[in-house]
Image (cartoon, rainbow, N blue to C red):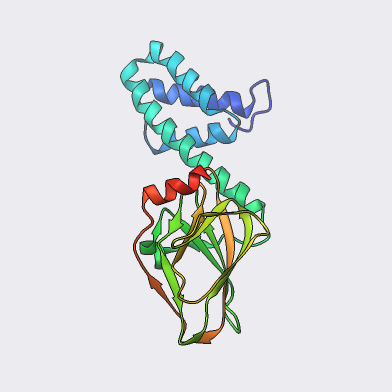
Length: 222
């Protein structure tokens, strides 16, 4: 049926399908699938809200409320994925996989893509909007430290006792050993930087307390 070539477009077929399923109260996994298809076929968040509101007067509000909740989840999830993909397309380095190994040291979700693990460690670290890591220090018995090279989005960097620095693509940050600091993304932007490990003897990271909302919000004022 979906491949029939006549007056109905995929967008029209999505609208008919979503309305028919909602009218039957079939707000299940198949309904979620067709909502995602509807978005992919060009139906916007405001349009789906208007469609469901109109249909509610004929199919009943209890069915409509269940459909509204699922539609909100689908469009929010899809919008987030769209923004993530736009960010990925804006740089030459991959976003990588969820940074699960270090998730306990981050507020929000981050992603890690190892670019070099020999000679010098180089990793592309990506932060979703509002994500930041805890205060921390890069330590070593000799040498060590870290260099950040910003490659996409907008972010922040702050050393203890100093003002927040706004980071944009092309900016570089040299972090000396033992300096307590944090870095992360702005509220309205994904952010990626290359983390370059400066060679040293017995290098290690000392993780400290999380960056509070108050500390982070001061960066947003900049």
